[in-house]
Image (cartoon, rainbow, N blue to C red; front, side, top):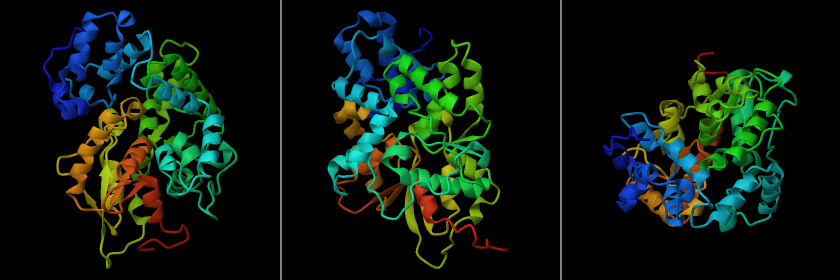
Amino acid sequence: MTDCAKCGACTVVCPLYQVTGQEFLTARGKIHLLERLVVADGSGALGEILSRCLLCGACTAACPRGLDIVDRIARARGELPSPPGRHPFLALLARKTLSHPPLLAGLAHLGRALPADSGLRLRLGIAPAKKGAPSDPNRPTSAGQATVAYFSGCLARHLDPQIATATGRLAARASGHAPWTPPGQTCCGQAAWAAGDFQTAKTLARRNIAAFLDNDLPILTSCASCHSHLATYPALLADDSQWHERAVAFSDRLYEFSSFLTACPDFATWFHRQADTPRQAVLYHDPCHLRFGQQITEPPRRLLRSIDGLALRELPHGPQCCGMGGLFHLAHPDLSQAIRTRLLDDFATLGIALVTTTCTGCLLQWRQGLSHWRQKTSVRHLAVLLDQWLLPATTPRPGE
């Protein structure tokens, strides 16, 4: 990391610096410390500083020398003698739950017994069960019946299955068949990697690669954070001769779902047209993992602009981090809330009541932040919003 020019390009884009003004919390400040200290011998104060990072990627994207600052901080966390952060037990418990699907499924089952307006249900991201609504309609039981596979992610699979249902219907419209969801898939491993627990991250990566190994179907992902981390599997398993080539083949099959849909030349004909009724204004929130890591910003907007009943709006000061940062919101709730408040203040100037995003973590952060909003505001995953405008497959398309 001695290649750092200390130019400060990373400072101005850092969400933490924007709300605190503290230089030691920026990438430049952390690099300065890492160049002079042995992390394994570091104090609790160093661990606290390293834990105060969203790993959003804004610094890496802004760095004129292309330094992978996010990876360096994650690796430094793994070298710490004790878990960093103010609430390490909560973060550890969350990572353990994510990496063990039966625990997550059990949590979802218990959570659905909570009242629909429960604050705990909102914090956990557990969607109320809808009576009579199939959670997995027409889902093929084998890869041979499908033309695309689906990596659902933890939230869509266990806590908010309407995301998986909506993605399934959109994928079926795009590919002609409902997607196949391998039962062996598990957490993508992003939370473990961000904590510096590379051993767990590698274990989860191998499980997911194995789950999709028996075919060469394209792999669709509807969670921005999952897609971003799944794409790093080749680098994560670079030193594993048995799994590296499989990881490369796996990553080559990945498709972020909005990019997958807009690659279909007729996608704009799939949705209802209501030109004679007032259009509903909607904000698309850019997840940091897509905006910086994957640089996927236009496909979601193309989908929204294709619906006559929606009017796409943008934030006055441009896209911003929501403060979720994976498990950062558990480790540092005060900083997470400060970043989110900055975003919500900008959003308030638009005077609209609909937000959509493609990251399940951002979805939770927005919902929690708007739970006490002065006006009722709906926050929906982009797949769920699009599905609500989707024409029945048997309905003739315009011009047919």
